[in-house]
Amino acid sequence: MSKVYTTEELIQILASERQACLKGERLKLDISVSGSPLLDQFIQAEGLQKFTAYQDFKAAIHQYQCDNQVSGITWREVTVKGKKLRYPEVDPQLMALPSDLEKLKAAKNPICQYWQEVTEGMDLYLSIKHGKQHQKIDKADCSRIAQRTEWAGLLVYEKSNFLEIVIQLGWGKPEEACYKRGFPASGSEYIHAVKPGQHPIT
Image 1 (cartoon, rainbow, N blue to C red):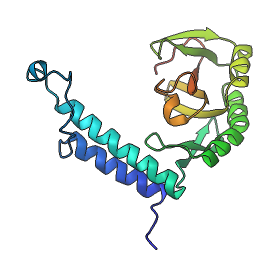
Image 2: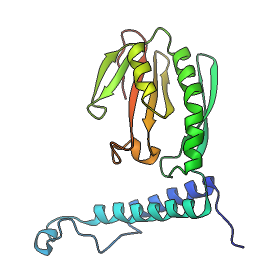
Image 3: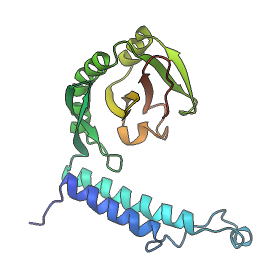
Image 4: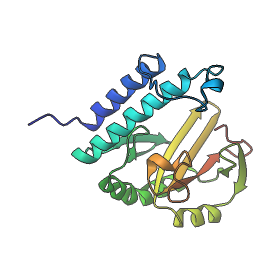
């Protein structure tokens, strides 16, 4: 019986393959920029060939995950204001299996509760226009957004005089939610909490 790779091994394999593609060691040579041989001779297609080679490899890994039921979940731990939380998230290069989605859904309420506790007294901003702008909101707005979503994730940016805690409230497939690829079936909203008077940097 052949060995089945673990989640961690797949993450390492994808990282190695990504580096190989970036270095030009892997190219999908049948890809052209415009499809017109006349135009393509004036356009550098190598970047697109590198990107496509990696995307094809990643799709093969996702199929491997499905075929072998290899989870895309990794466990993260954050500590903010002395409070610790351990929660599941899907690695950005992997896909979520149906069982992974159930774990994410089960973790949503503890993540939201933790975020509410550690952001008490902070200013809240909703990310809009694909993260290019932020609109100030209140806790009631956050609750309404959370009710419409299925799972959550956290990002923390902390320096000596700055703290930003971002909650991602998502629905559908995590691998499609953050890039708007799968919208409207998959997507996410980002709410940024910062110290009063400060503004989000992400």
